[in-house]
Length: 208
Figure (cartoon, rainbow, N blue to C red):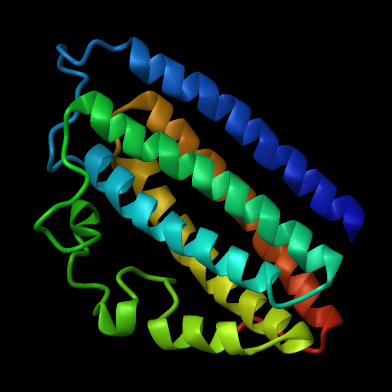
């Protein structure tokens, strides 16, 4: 299993290296041309929504690192937290570069034509996001129980994130953002398989 985590960590590192090039490429754009997205574009909507989505993944990952001593889970959580925190920084940085707001009055997922998809009940603002109740439960568990709940929550979270990233691949117009979105799809699909194996080792499985 360590070998698989190492492979995913390497893939994540490759995404981050590519992300550096992505940030540089967008920074080179002076923002005056027609390539600058509008506030209601898919590019801006994805950047805003995925930044929020990623923030919760980072939060969950740091919670579980404090609730277990299992090095395999702690390593995975660290990789996810670092990767998604860096990607979140890029997404928010692009909004700054484009001169666009980081928040919108429109419901999440509006850029995908799915503004009514998530109820937002109990803090779950977008598909795959954990509720506030689930996060509080994670904070009370320890050891194997915390590991299983984290892996289940993160599997759901990744599935929702993949759905959003695929939406950007289809609808976004900024090439570097589309490529980053595709990188998210590829890396998170690999992590879902890894987490399925980790859950099986613990006598559990994904919730859906």
